[in-house]
Length: 296
Ligand code: CP
Image (cartoon, rainbow, N blue to C red; front, side):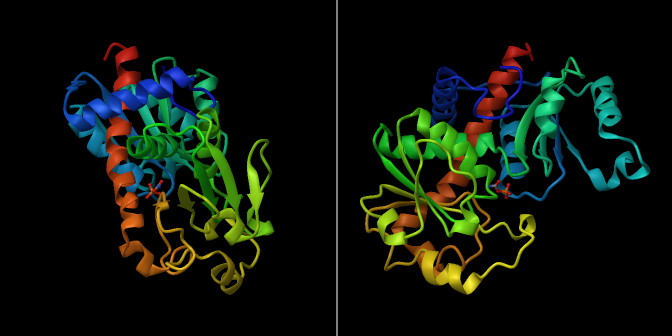
């Protein structure tokens, strides 16, 4: 495993290995030391959870980490990203954790193999992929349910603009979960084979095991959004959330839009901070596997 670009590029065996390794890190029974590795974190789009949990994972693995700040870098003097990466590689960086608004850029950088020595880890690319989020969501669900086959998940919200939904659908279908997507037509996006689509909340929440709420990604939407309509028909409340449903959200949450604030205080919502915590173990596992494959 030289790069982690998307879920499609991972085998089920690699996904299971990431899961087991993350479990070992969580239980404290695996100790890895990558003090020879030099990882640059390059975030071209805002982040709290992903950036901080990668940094935490890097610290726990004794990795030398470098925070690349685009605003104070020579990108601002007109240098292009290609030259920037070549120079980082020449300086001695071996791995890049990157978040970017462009859908294809990280994939292109890794696939073209311009930079022989550099590995790329996708920390969120445009609307297309957020593989470490899907892996930590899978980890969180599997730690709770053990066997995910046949479990029903309803993903509700702005599916059209969500890289989290796309990566989760790809991963969870492989592990035989029943996937429902719930959204108004304008936020549904392209339909994927095997996924069940709903516009009615009551139908989509029937017998559900897991509800995964998504934020409406205003920054990616040009047209006017009717928030009143969304809240009336799709907001998760204490009344419409099934009693035993496991409530998940990748964050950040826009309180009182996709989820009513008081739901966040219920037992169902305790999962959400667990997702953030589990992100550290899963990112440790991903870094551990990639750096080990490089002999670092
Ligand atoms: N879930 C997630 O990617 O959160 P951040 O944008 O805060 O990293």
